[in-house]
Length: 125
DNA sequence: CTTCTCACA
DNA sequence: TGTGAGTA
Image (cartoon, rainbow, N blue to C red; front, side):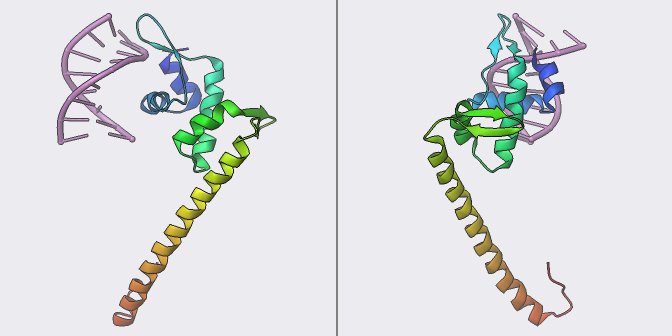
């Protein structure tokens, strides 16, 4: 299939599909014309990519994870031995992001609270 | 009519 | 991230 059908079947727009390719997440064949040719497997791959992206993984790690994962009744199961350790690291990275965001929120809260004392009429959140 | 790349604001 | 130009 070419780009148009791929867009229809994945619900992911053209721009993004090319971006995934740029990031090494997809490697469709090329026609002599330069047109991309995707296989049925790629449709499934895009679904996985979206799941992993939603899980907060970077495209960089997704590129490493994809070839090391197997689909087993609606679930991604790690195949490679080192993958689990890698995912733990990624989990730590995400945890640090959460910590940073919580710190930011706490910082804003102090500012908001200070302002609330000045002008009690202003509601929070 | 579809897809490609590249560039711009 | 979207849009448009100019091709093949």
